[in-house]
Every structure is written in C-alpha cells, then in structure tokens.
Image (cartoon, rainbow, N blue to C red; front, side, top):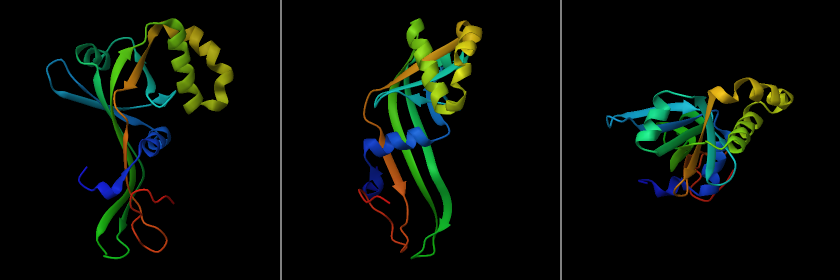
Length: 171
C-alpha cells in the first residue's frame, strides 16, 4: 500500500465488508480475461462469506476455471475539499481481500448460507425464509468464499478540526 498511514487492520476491513450494500467480486474467465461484478455477500466468521446465484452462468464458469477471487468494497464515500489545503479529495472507507470460491454442494450448508444472506439483507422477513427455500433451493446455487489471507482496510477521513485521521486513530 503506497500510503501506509491510511492502512487499517483486518477488523476494520471486515466491518467495511459487513456494512457495504454490495461487494465487488473479481474473477478470471476461462479465456484469462477479468470478470467482476457487485454481489450481496454475507459473512459467517472472519474468513467465510456466502453469495447466491443461478445454477449456471459466467460466475460459476469462472469459479470452475480458477477459484481465486478478489473482493473489494467501499463505504462512507464522499467527495470533499481538503479542509487544510483546499484540494479536491475523497473521504472513504475501503476493504480488499483474496479468497477461494467454492460451490456449496452440501444441502445443510447451502440452506445455512442462504439463511445468513437473508438475515443480513432481510432480517425482518425471516418468517418467509422456509417457504422461499421450499420454492427455490433446487434452482439456487450458493457459493462460499474462504479468505486465504487477512483482509486489508484503508480509509481517508477528516476529524472535526480538519485533520486527517491516520492509522489507528478512530472516530
């Protein structure tokens, strides 16, 4: 990382990944070209994320070819004028990580992964979860991403006095 003063720890990065409305997952197509798209990921622990998709398609083709993925997310993104120098800049919180994606084949893990996703994005509608599983489990793929190294966080934020908050200094 070029500006080490903006690097944040893994716990910060996981918080960004948890709060982001979507996480961009980047993969490699079988022809070697890049493929990335925003997905709704949900996390179970410090290394494990899930997303769902159709039973066939480009995401699954990429994973079958090369399961290594790169995930990234940004929150609290706001263009601003630097309070001390007047430069155009951007305040943000971001996170990146590398992992291995695998299609979940175990029925119990598949249901558990979908439940985690639903709890994250529709927590007030869990009463409809069992019916949704009964209708669509067989036509829904679930993918587990296991991080292969700790995530990295980065941020640029100013405090009330206009000073940039450097590494380790929290709000």
